[in-house]
Image (cartoon, rainbow, N blue to C red; front, side):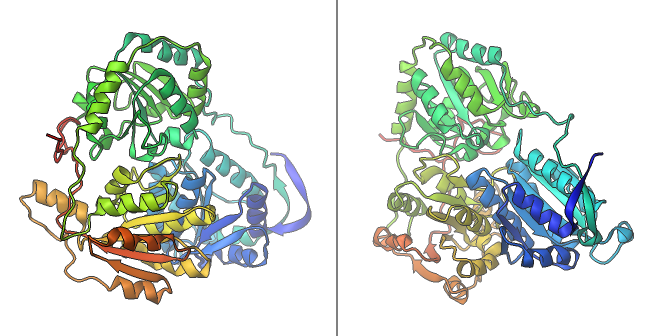
Length: 566
């Protein structure tokens, strides 16, 4: 391998930071420990990269995810060896599930101690192999610039994902006067970006043969930045659009062709369209189980075109009649550049519009604040333009259903892994990445108690996120399933005793409010507009459920909890 002479000798820790800075990295989320002390000493003396000190390694990872999900840039996290690295596992797995570009540095014991059960040693390369796009263990200080350059390229190209670099302590301390050439040379890694034009043309030509076409838009289209092209394509051919959870925001909620989210807690209109469509055009959704319901009955009469950056996803669950490997944005650009195909979808659009309009809205309750109303009101107060972050549970689905999304990358949530505790740190990362945008976090009392220590960051780093805590004194989604399918046996899903969340917020120096009056809630929520870190706790009924709901093993049209106008 070609060697490059350095002007002055440099330690491995210096090479790490200089390489990151040269590749555009300006922020790291991390937590120090013995195996990364050399790198943290270098951070203390280095200018140009900001370090955010989390309060738990899981927080570091989710903060990096929030940064990456809201911007499309790579998020970088740094943790120590052993328990520091294993505490990062959940965030790494979460990023893998949702195709989030992350670079994760894990400290490691010095190379002579590797494999000898040294203090705070863990085989993090072996542990993370199934949950990373790739991983490395650095064995030569000269290799640091090459490995970091490769890692960032791998994490951010093709289908994005997390890459781990395991960094032994002595490798950080060794001083070298030359490095191995960091020029990218990865002949075995050449992801397909540009879709096959003949396949894309075939997708378009099929429109002339079907009367009930439907666009399904997922996280892949969202990450590709394909919103403008997707809406233009839908409007040109008058094709209704269903999104996945991670596709929300690709088409504005109030667009006439938008049917909202499909799947287990999707809208009635979306799920009926998925059932009745005769041609499904999928941009960047992997047909996961929460979307399809019973696979054997999912869109069983539909012809399917599937565009995905990852060839492994095509025909993995639903057979694709037209498989197209490539970037969703580029596929849509090609579609818009082809000559317009004649098709008439007017009757179909009338049907799906009727299905949207025939469903009754949620009913108000004179005794309890409705979580749906809280979300709708905050949507009004923020003009539907905030970056919306959620934790995981009932509140996540209500936010998916009731916030008036307008923009891509607007919803930051844990999709594939469904990670409770994601919300607070992810909101912090999103706000640090977007200081001029309003960032609203919706969280339940369960998830809040998993990572609320990250609130210590809010004042320390000037992060004025608004935390909307929907408190039902239970693990709401678990409780709902127990009530629905386990004869109402609420086994360990209710909290008989909880902290005083108002005092907890005050302990962190965060302004706190508690609302529970349904007649004043619309006015009360105006506090969300104040530009300070804030906890807004809203008490809701512990019997409130998320509807519609498709039970496990049922088809999308077999929804529970849908009521229609007379």
